[in-house]
Image (tube, rainbow, N blue to C red; front, side):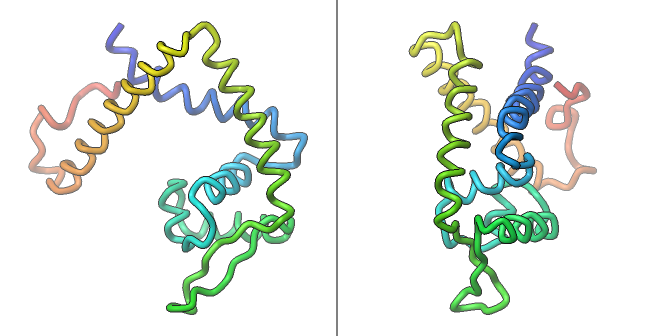
Length: 162
């Protein structure tokens, strides 16, 4: 059972996004667009494009294209940074808020359905376990980035993917 946990953890984000994609499609949003909008909202306005790309986990050129599409839809605007005119900061427009509220409502409903059968205590414990797993993963990632791949031992480079 433990050997399949990694695969199951990897599958859940895909399943989650697939459910949301299907439910958000009537709003005219692709996954790339709703993920970007939602991250801007959660991160807070006025952050540089490079920070947003890092948080979302995409390359800057891909984000620039998505932001251009969202700008054309009137949902975001990019403003030059006061201290560095080459850097752009991202802001939501008033038109984005009703859409973000719909996205949030759809996400809450899907979350409730996905967590059906779990008590509040189960969900709280799951959150704690996921926090531990994430912290462990971030520590491994940081350690691996400090160590060149050719010097990693078999204890740090597992032969099984999950």
